[in-house]
Length: 176
Image (cartoon, rainbow, N blue to C red; front, side):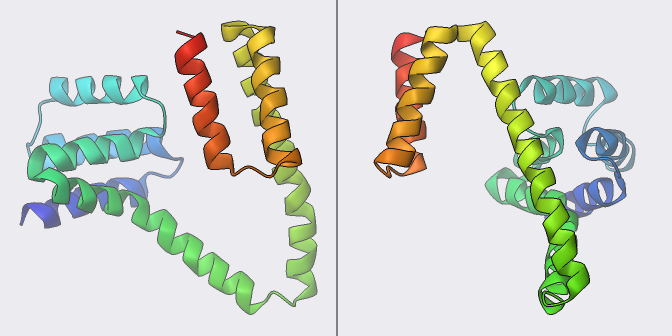
């Protein structure tokens, strides 16, 4: 029964939480504090504070913690699935619709306009990362990691997994 309650609490909060994780936090609070009485308002606010301090989206972090706290690993799995299920189902439906109509001129025109927008968004994220890295670790380290990554990825065809692991190792050794 606890698994079903975990599933419903997270599904309802994330299905109705239009606007992403921050919009679903009050709905999740209603579910776990008011409906199921698993936590007090104070305990839930502490969970949100810790979740905000961690990198990544808040909704899966809260779901994983609540699920694990209430029902172990299986509970965390159920809660996480319920958190991503609405987006996953809608995405699969949208992709199915796009695949059925992939030869349509309207769909082709849409993808023509979406690709440049995605490229601009990725460029903005990359610029923000570089600016943040410049201010936190300095230009020398940024240039060394960037140039080494370029050559490893583009010139020698090394897998991105190994390049990321190498950058993490570099940071662990030189940027403590």
